[in-house]
Amino acid sequence: MSVVAFHAAVHGRVQHVGFRYFARAEAERLGICGWIRNNPGGEVEIHAEGEAENLKEFISWLRKGPPQSVVISVDIDWREPYGTYKGFMVDYG
Image 1 (cartoon, rainbow, N blue to C red):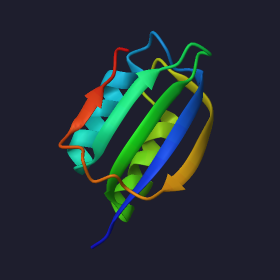
Image 2 (image 1 turned 45 degrees about the horizontal axis):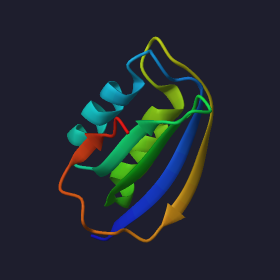
Image 3 (image 1 turned 180 degrees about the horizontal axis):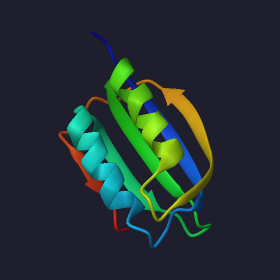
Image 4 (image 1 turned 135 degrees about the vertical axis):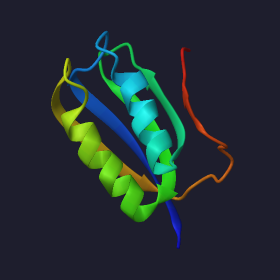
């Protein structure tokens, strides 16, 4: 099993609807490490690392989001994993 990673930007109505917290719960359920944060432009930014199949399932979830959100698009950039994350955190920075 190989660990892979992606960096993503989720566009739409994804702030102030609990998106980060639902995403963290889904990432933890799938055993994914990394982080999620709101960006000033209104999108949610994510870095995720884990097994390829789990990341694909997570991307499918990101394309739908929680019930209150309206996801317009998800930009995915596949990358090499850092391998330094121990869990999935919400970045409030």
